[in-house]
Amino acid sequence: MRLPLLALLARGPAHGYELKQDLEQLLGSAYPQPNVGQIYVTLGRLEKSGLIEGEEVEQSSRPNKKIYHLTDAGREALRAWYEETADEPRVRDEFFMKLALAPRTGLADQIALINKQRRQYLNTMRELSRLAATEDRDNRVSQLLIEGAMLHLQADLDWLERCQEELEEQG
Image (cartoon, rainbow, N blue to C red; front, side, top):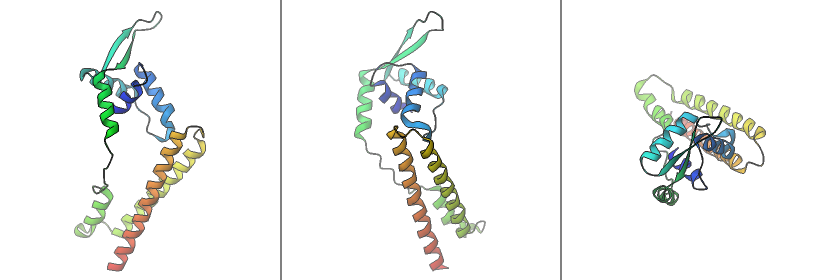
């Protein structure tokens, strides 16, 4: 949550609730909605680390609000983030660990595990399809997020099929 908040502040000062709304509008309902409390805690941490500065703004009929803006250090952290690649291979997959250990424990059947996981992926794909149909068509970011999730799920389903074929050949 730290770096996405910095990215939103790069376009100009904002308060916490405004940042929450910006994230929701940008990402749509496919992305887990941030908790406003989590946003304010993160803003406090960013301020303590010198990446943003907050300024109290008086409001006549409401409590004061704090407006945050990006510091030079925050802008530099954001530049560094954009320079990094996201190459996290999925070799620490919890499902695969279950599949690999099932024969050693005798507590689960590998094919049953594959079938259960396949059902979960298919249910998730159905939910995402429903979400895509109801999501604002003009929100390309949200549509791309949903499409990316669907493509990852399809790859996971193909991989499950491959695992099942391999196990059936062995057995």
